Amino acid sequence: MALDPPRAGAKAQAEALAASAVPVVAAVSCNPATFARDARILIDGGYRLDRVTPIDQFLWSPHIELVATFRR
Image (tube, rainbow, N blue to C red; front, side):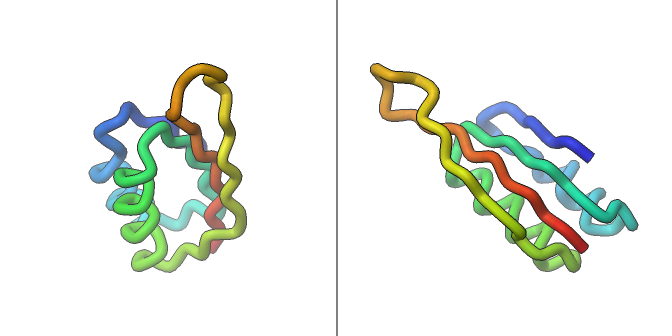
């Protein structure tokens, strides 16, 4: 399952995934704060954070993207 929400995050989707049997979630985020909130929901739902990689794709901006994998 791939998850690439807007800056507001994916709270409802994370809650649905936490209640599902989906084995792997690939998540992309442009907001570390909402990523942390959504990651907590997934982890509390039985996922483990397998890997997270920050990507500085905007040369002249302080913004970063996060790419993460969660597994059951």
